[in-house]
Image (cartoon, rainbow, N blue to C red; front, side, top):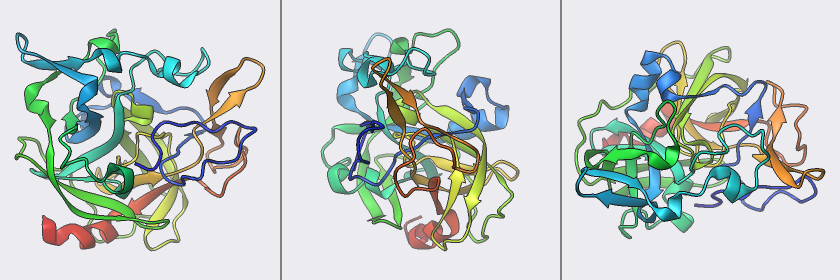
Length: 304
């Protein structure tokens, strides 16, 4: 993966990795899966987190996977986040997000399956984990995941990663009894549609990010949107709020966080809903880039 969880300070130049940085636009609209509308809870059942198996341990007695000692450190501790950053006390063990498009095929970002991450299937060190979610009033270090929710992959069926195109189709090691998500296969999204993202921001347990909007709809390959997403959201399904169809794959965006020089900790980068007036103003990203699903579907349809 090009860049997993590094954070850029105000006084530093942007990291030379251009993919999968994200940011908050307007009010932070991320919610836990359990508190989202039922339809988004249902959609979340078909989304997955890419997790290194060293962050998980198997409990034979309970028949579940639990967080290992390597994964117990909170996001706030790992990233030196300020005390008022949301979800700072939760674990963050996921590196990418993905979603089912067939009972044994998953889509994600290309940089989650090529480059540094090209061995996600052959190495046997990673698994796609469904149901990586917090429960109400739960310390997320106590998350338990049924064995049936853990699946490895056998092959990267198709993957492209460059400064414009970024997607991958992954063959899973077995068929899952989960409904593949419905895709927008042919129509360009309208500029006034509202968007929802389901994935693992900063590697946190799955969040539903609501109230996204389109900033730029001109590119034939991707559109740019105001979405409350972070590193770890790469590969997330981006939904049309009205139709429930997947409109694309979240692949890159603005810088996540900036250093507070007064408190020596890091705060989330905030922008307005148009991607302007950001805490961190350097860089070329207008917003969060989403690979268009009709374009991706044409590239992967022969593999489905």
